[in-house]
Amino acid sequence: MIKLGFVLLIAVILVQGMLFWKYQRQVKDICRQLAFMMKHDSNMLINHEFDVGGIGKLSDKLNELLELRRKEKQHYQEKEALIADTYTNLSHDIRTPLTSLDGYFQLMEECENIEDQKRYLSIIHERIHSLNEMLEELFMFTKLKNESYSLELTLCCMNRILKETVFSYYDEWVRMEIQPDIQITEEVLCINGNVQGLRRVIRNIIKNGLDHGEKKISITLEHRGGHAVLRISNLVKNPGEIDVCHVFDRFYKADRARSRTSTGLGLAIAKELVYRMGGEIGARIEGNEFIIEIVFPIMDNRLGQ
Image (cartoon, rainbow, N blue to C red; front, side, top):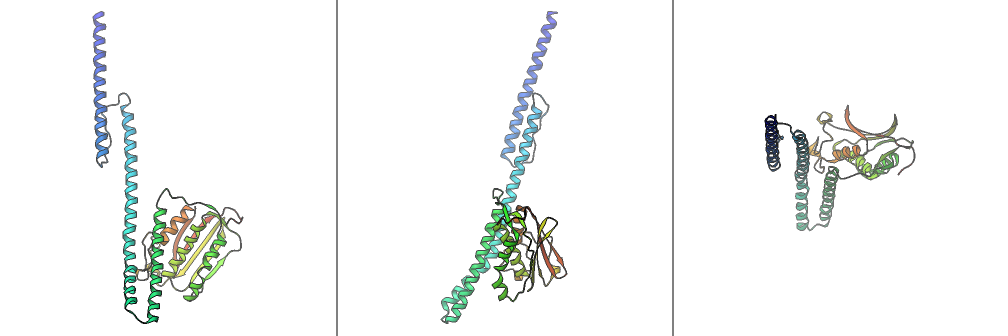
């Protein structure tokens, strides 16, 4: 009986020793796998031979962390690629007005006629203004793609913001012989938005119409089913050339011949701002009319801004 007990004790000790040895070997193997994966860009997962002492749960948790790390790394790489692509495309767009500026500066130096010098100076001012707009759009686009950037939202009166923004184009429309059709409801429509953001959205859409459309633009604000609906449309010469599924993509330009002063970021910025303010934006073609419609939920019919 004593011998049997002794044999059982020895057997238990051997089994425990074997389990401890396997456990230790498994932990070392997991550490080696983890060190390899941290050092190399690999999509491998940690493997374990058996589940003893929580080895299986430990492996599962480590695999979850590895997956999370890979997703974060991929997201970071995609964001870096997006910004790099943005700078590459925009640097190409900026090169043209810069080359033009250099040429007009040379003409001014060589020109002795005062009237010609004034004309060249006016063109230079116009080119500098275009460059400022390009750089401002790049700055805004980069900010909006930064997840840490937050847009402060307050109660905004759509009627007032739309009127102020639209009327700022009056002189330009007179110069371009454009007669806009503007219909803004008298009912006060307030949304949860950002004043500067709304103005930029409206400006970008109007500018898109001026750059690519014909000499007719229509702007309507109405109350529809508990929502403030802003509709901006303009006539286009070749509606079949516009891909409405991609007009909000960055760098999309339906007519490159008429887009030399455009970055192709305007509508992409407008879309991002609208989404950040809890709204929806879409585009469609009806006949020869290109239409952009923005919908915001109405918060309260009190004057906010």
